[in-house]
Image (cartoon, rainbow over all chains, first blue to last red; front, side, top):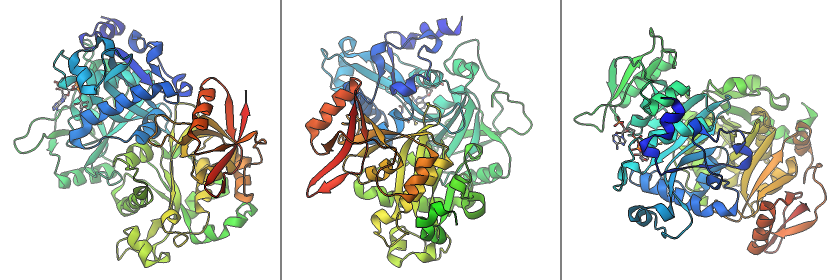
Length: 287
Length: 280
Ligand SMILES: CC(C)(COP(=O)(O)OP(=O)(O)OC[C@H]1O[C@@H](n2cnc3c(N)ncnc32)[C@H](O)[C@@H]1OP(=O)(O)O)[C@@H](O)C(=O)NCCC(=O)NCCS
């Protein structure tokens, strides 16, 4: 199956509308047909125009609904200054007129209103290094909705978002405890740049990266023809084990290379445990 | 000393420029902005190394101190995800011993710390438009510790060198209409208004602007006070608290009319006005 056919026929995306929030001068640098999935003109949203306010407020609501319990919701100005103006926000939504009551209630939207209700979003900004992007916001309400199965929505939003902005290299930072590691790891083994990060006010943060090849994006989205070789874990780190994070950081600073090869696994006393493998003697063209 | 910096002799004598940037971003940056060598007379630190932890905490404290009072809570991840990772932080620092005790306390400088302390910080985010950046933070200890912390006008010096460090040719930003900062930015060139009434900002009475950066104009800003020599005459003044007027201009901009801020804001009593130039 061709990549375009795979994406266009993906069950999770049926009935969903892709959207992009970006200024007109940023948008000209993007691919608005990722794997043949075209973003309708009305869902190309310019955050500098007054008509965008209602939809942008719903994105804020999506952010606080998903992040709420983890305590990282964003103020309106942070969205403006960090997501919309320098970069892009890509995601999927459903028109209010077609939305089930469950969704209308959640977002307090009237069934007659002409507005897209967002179910997921992925936000990223470019880096000084050309064609490299830094991801900073991922949320999906997919697993909370009962009216349909949205499995894979978070991962699809990130992968297609990276295709839209035409990223070649990707970097991200996340807490050792984050469930989102389950999404990130789908893009292949993740190269570790920091394992203990005092520059982030949450020092139990790791910085990771991967190359955004079509291979990585399609494998992440579950295309059956694309997969990764994943090294075997050599050690495990639990989200509170600062000593292990610092030891690993010292090794990275001394020039050794590590990756997170695969998804976190369950742990009897912690949220999960994260596998680590050395990259020393292995050939990973993907990284 | 380069005559360009005549007015900034004190700042350059007493303070030192610093640059926090990762190994990935370092090769893209200008390390001798306007002839000041950061390698020879500055501090260049990799924020991802543990040995720089103490200085990084002080940068975070400066951030909290300057943003805290505005109640614009900055999520914890922002300065890393939107500053350090995509670009870097540039600013000036000074010896901890040069600070009064109360300033040290405000900045939470550890008792026994005698090293360098950040006094200003400038963060901008790259955008997909080539060499265009978006201003994220420009702050100075002087904002909160009035005149007691750092030499005067260190913010202007920080921004003039900062735009060169990151090799910017264009800078976007969003600023509250009432902010005196507008006066500083317009010193670098006329500001094209992108939004006059900013619906998607927490403070709608904010202006989103675009500044084309030219070296000669940046240098001129270090020497001359007031609006940039590149600014054309104003066609009228905007009362920045007249919401209806701001909305009207916003509608006009959305339909293709151009507005530029071309001069310093002027405050008489409780009226703040900004000179603008309208062109079809
Ligand atoms: C993290 C988040 C984006 C995942 O969205 P999603 O639509 O459920 O993601 P996907 O369906 O693509 O799931 C990808 C993988 O993550 C796993 N996963 C998702 N949520 C999980 C959870 N709470 N605990 C454990 N695993 C989880 C899925 O099972 C799936 O793995 P599998 O295919 O092996 O089963 C979503 O839960 C969210 O918005 N969380 C709050 C915000 C957040 O933490 N954002 C990330 C920080 S930037």
